[in-house]
Image 1: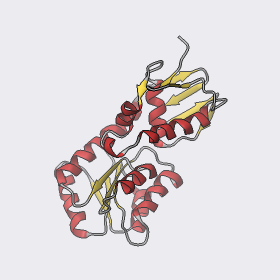
Image 2: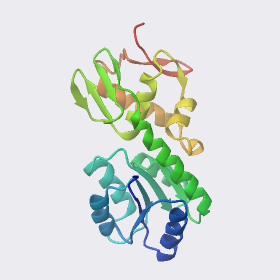
Image 3: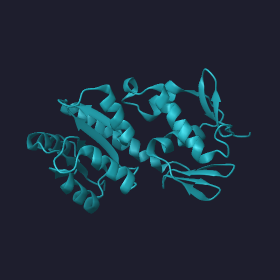
Image 4: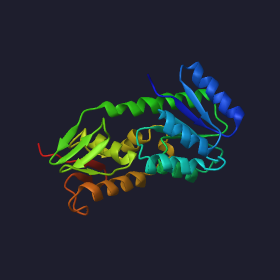
Length: 230
C-alpha cells in the first residue's frame, strides 16, 4: 500500500480543495496547517509525497524542505512546492533547495494532480539495477553511491544525474538532454550552468583529480558522458 501524501498549507480552503481532488484520485491524504505539525506528521507517517506551501506560520516551507533533505536525509520523497512567488529566481531557488516540482498559485487542480502523478512515478525509478564501474558503485534501491566500498554523500539530483550517465556509458549527452532528464517539468527555468554545477560537485566526490577527470568526461561544445573502458 502506498504511503500517504502530506499536504502542508495554512489556508484551509486551499488545503481542503487539494485533499478533495487527491482523495477522488484514490490517494490517502494527511494534512498540516503549519511547519511544526508537518514535522510531527512527517516522522509519524513517512509520507510518499509532500505538497508544501512556502509561506507557512512557525516554520517556513523552505525550512521544512531543507529539514527533509538535510536533517532527515530523505532524498526519495517527492516534494512539490506551492507558492504565490512569481519570479523565476524563486523557482530555481526552490528546485536547488531540493524540491522536485514548483507550482505557482493560483493553480489548476488538474495541473497539481498531473504533477503528483509524475512525481510519484519518478520516485519509483529507484527500483533499478545496481551499476558498478572500476570501484564506483551506484545502488538505486538504497540510493547509495560507493567509491571503493566507502559511501559518498550526494544530493538527489547528483544521484539521478550520475545514475543516468552510468546507465548509458560512453554516450555523450547535451546539457539540454540532461536538464530534460533531471527536471522534466521545469526545463524552461533551468539554466545550462545548473548541470555544470552538478557535474563539478560529482567530480569532486568521485574523481581522484577533479580537474583531470577520468570518469565523467566533457565533450567540448556538446556535453558530458560517463567513460567506461570497453
